[in-house]
Image 1 (cartoon, rainbow, N blue to C red):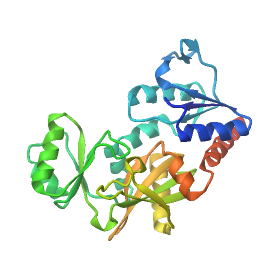
Image 2 (cartoon, rainbow, N blue to C red; image 1 turned 60 degrees about the vertical axis):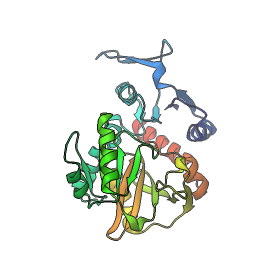
Image 3 (cartoon, rainbow, N blue to C red; image 1 turned 30 degrees about the vertical axis):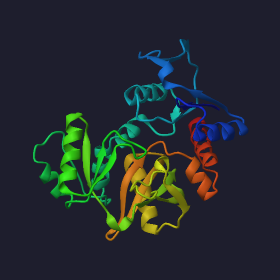
Image 4 (cartoon, helix red, strand yellow; image 1 turned 45 degrees about the vertical axis):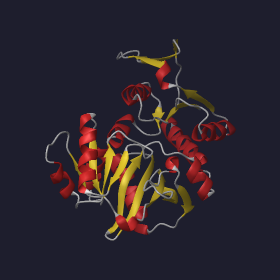
Length: 295
């Protein structure tokens, strides 16, 4: 098979692992920088150009897309799909899941519990937003943020109002979210592949921080998840129609709550801690889907 990995950085651990496993299986795996691509839209001859040259057909595409240049990258991924490539996660599913508000709405509609969240584009009475999520302390998040960037805890009403007002001046879209004290600044990252939780790790924030993201200095440990945690992680993947997804869960007094969805979960932390070969499971899925397409 010819497999394209859409990524701007081939040196990333996840890219290197997928290339290694794919090539070991005899596949031709190439890193494609999405910003070096442009597309031709035509009902008879849709095509993709890379570095000024017509790009040949790829059997499968692995999107490893960050938050920057999302508009361009999603349109490019859709073009690969139109040209007949299997995408590990579909462009339309990524578009919905990347939108924090949309994904929370879809999960809530399906009966999955999440921290109470309020969102508004512009509203003068900040106190109302704070009270909707149960008061302070609370979490304020940039809708476009990732890897813990743009996530702030406000301990007092005055702090919350100041932070919200500051984001308003920047014309930034934010959400205000209930703070779950009993989670003790820990969460569980469940990696779901093809409707199965293949690995799970617990992430704990570093001293002086409440964010458990490994990119922010958090530490990770092996963890045993409950059947309910496993069930809601798989259900979230189904609701958002994602074949590979990172589901972040916190443990609260009212049960497990989903806090975040990650459509390009990193492999380094979860492979290192779980001692599992996650990259091979991803290539397994691509091979299975390609075989089904041929048949």
